[in-house]
Length: 492
Ligand code: AMP
Ligand code: MG
Image (cartoon, rainbow, N blue to C red; front, side, top):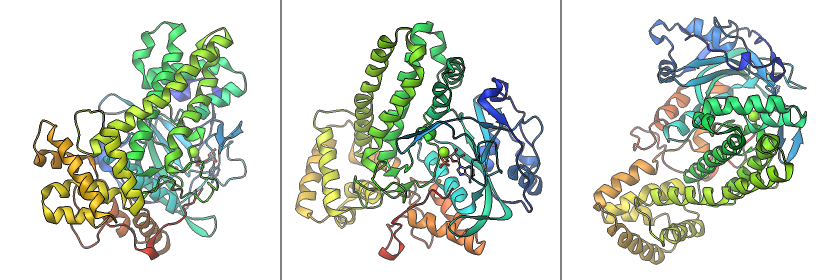
């Protein structure tokens, strides 16, 4: 059933990893399987057998050709450097070449202790596993670069966190698991040979065009490329109200994918200061702080590359600094592009940024729901009824009217009619996102009552986020007061 493994990381020098087998679990049961993704990865889905799959995705059977390993990495957590983290509860099985020729990592998360576990049990509770499954698949459907979820199994064992919970294992798929923290681990040990190997691996896997560049430009170009992808990624997050929640350097992917869905959450009412994570006491990773933090993380990445950028350390610092400083402009141009798309604009004009900001300000004043307010812009173009649906989200109707007429004057300068703009808007501004309260309800039903129906129903709608969902449950509405999720937890 498994495609054959390429084993790239396992062939790098031994000090980059710890070889380690998964710890078998008592009663593996497959609770989610992503057939479409499996097919894309080259699995023989016709030959699929749920019992065998449960064994493999629980780590009870290692698939043929896999050489499981825990990757070494370090990281800045909430600004503090931890020289050794590493995969404490995850194992890379190996890489496969998907049907489009791309290398993809397959990783088990929650598969038992590793040499990097420190005090941890190496396990994952079901709730966080299903959260990652739901949110990463929703992100993918929203068109945002992300790791994917291939399978979730329950283990038949309990894990003990704040309360005992069912244990689970997630199979995660990533373009790679190279993180800023991977580079930091070796830079902190002054192992510049390993840093160069990692940089070459990153270029080969994610930025192959750079391999052509002369050696004295290549690693600065790598930094520039990662800066570009992170700038774009964070702008895209913010365009859907996503708050990552734990933007530590070990959770910052070199490929530019979203990775680590711990305490992540979506903003309902628009407020740029929003924070959900219970451990983020000072709001370091608040919605609006995300670009500044991404830049900070990239500066840490730059530090690891300095010896490769220039033999002269002052010159290396100067060159790297200018690339890091350019993040601000890169991010801003990505963010403006996101906002223009959210307003249905394909062309660019001077006043577009102010037009978007004025809407955001009105949303903030009214605590309007971020997702609904943008989604209903299209409704407002349909006629009076649609416009009323938008207006009910705002306090100051006159100000909204004034804004709408400015917007429509601007739309008139696009080359297409309003019906086409409305279509564009509905393909850009989602109708459904994995709202925190719905995710919480789905996780609770699964973990407390062994009822996976809410999880499956939610997964079905959030993987078609631009369609208005039919059915009894209204997945588009914001939470009622009693449903509101005020805090999220790492759940590790
Ligand atoms: P995370 O919060 O998932 O980004 O994890 C941060 C670090 O803690 C990583 O090195 C993880 O491997 C490690 N870790 C998290 N949970 C556990 C656990 N239950 N057992 C062992 N290590 C863990
Ligand atoms: Mg992590």
